[in-house]
Image 1: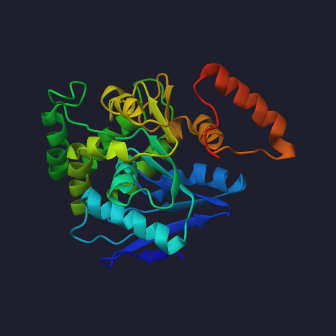
Image 2: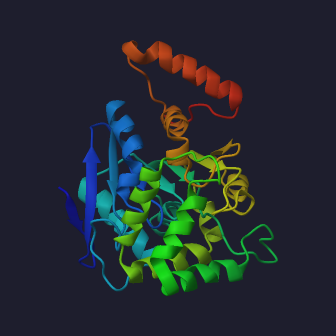
Length: 302
């Protein structure tokens, strides 16, 4: 089942790996479900069912001219859950994908969901305002769209350096990873790229936060220059009752890749993963180290 058709007839490319309790992975802008491959493989190996899909307009999915508002994108998520039969699922959204998680909890009442993850997420609100003083300046967010219109390929070349926290001397990722990200973004439709940039930049998810009624893992890098932690993760953690915030000191926006091993361990811990006899000793050592570094991290999923 590589493709499912949404309620408005859009084809979505879906990866469905492993068997067990489903974990649905929602990628960030402007990438594809491939950005979750490391976690999807680890989840499947650990006895979970990893479901990841390309958002409409990106990756191998269809590129309709409309439907890039969060209500429609969240209906797409609901259609993926329905088509795959995923029940008792954990929804994990990275960056823009966090918005789909939040809107699903309110718009669809969290149907079939027992846990949530907001990773480097734009939730609850990005723009700077009187009631959101730590947000990004509106002019800066607007300039993203204008820069893409002028030279989308040049924009992505610069954007991904910040995305991965690349410096003048050192870099947490290889040039090949940078090239993959640029190539993936370049293949997305121009309309989807522009429309989704506006959606994640200006959608207010603060009204959605009260709909979170499940254990929620929030992970964010303190050096995230793409999505400021003070306006997003720290605010969301205070507003969501059953949440735990894990801050990665010095980590950039793309921590699922730059801190892949650590994040994968933390996600498995949150899900309540029980390691096999073969890897139990190593897992327990890593878990003890993680909990010493992050005392707030503990299994909270059933």
